[in-house]
Length: 428
Image (cartoon, rainbow, N blue to C red; front, side):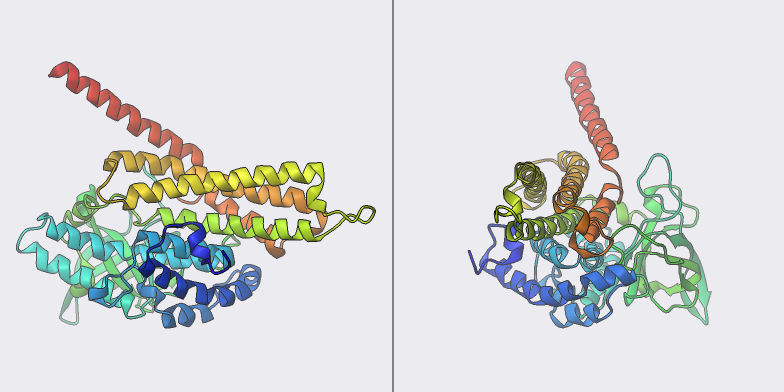
């Protein structure tokens, strides 16, 4: 259909309200697309995109209307990051991480509603959650910093950044010290939403959150790195050296992080499947570009389109299969995380995601490999759609965890659950 929104290629059963929100995304795509090559070449986030997305109201895309947002859901976010990924993957990635901040507002509120907090804890938790949501809907860009340079062998994310109680100039608060190795919109976002660990805690009960102003004393940017892909997402990270944060800008109730995650169908980051939608959007973009060029370009002797040669037909067929595989995995995960009532347990959703993330990103990368093969030497360049897509999509193989680790962890969840079921049946 000629009037079909780009986001509808992924979420093909949009409601009227979802289409209205997707139309706002559609309006910014030409500007994103126009800056994509330059953002990649410069390795810098296009600063004009900040006002572009803010003025469109998209920084509050998944914030409930009661807090001033557009009232979207994970379906809206996946459609948005997919559409943006087809135009400028770097901007789409940074936009995704801004929106993961919403989970730090929505999940605590849901945990309060579920009775997981005491009467004394609930007002503190609610105040922080609502502050996050109102900042987003008001046009404040948040960078969600969880990942660190310190890693452990048993976890994808180890939190070593510490929070120590402190008082400055009569104001009670916390001092943060640590290093965040990855977080889009470094030096771009208005606030960094930082996950840290309360000093003296070794378990997840000590995980806490802070709103850190970009220009706060003690905040510095890590050195720029010559990254392989998504080069315009400003993802070089930050260092925190005794950064003081007042208590009203912190959620330090012990156990709060664990309680809020009990209300999530997804993962540690929040709305994480929308990150793979960026890669599928980029894969669709390079697929469309390659097919259009190969169909338009003809052989000198026959005048027939190059796309009709036997070799190109095989490659195009492989690209099509890989693209469809990515869509199938992504749409299935989206269904599992959004349908009401739920059709799978949290453990099943988690296991499915561990496999889906790697499968989606591998399939998207394989589309780019096909585009390179089909396009020939003239398109084997660092710039241009094919070269950029190849590098951008390579990042999906390693971001958060590679496909192999995802399959290993999914298998562990599945077999552990099966063993527990067998033990329960034998013991009963």
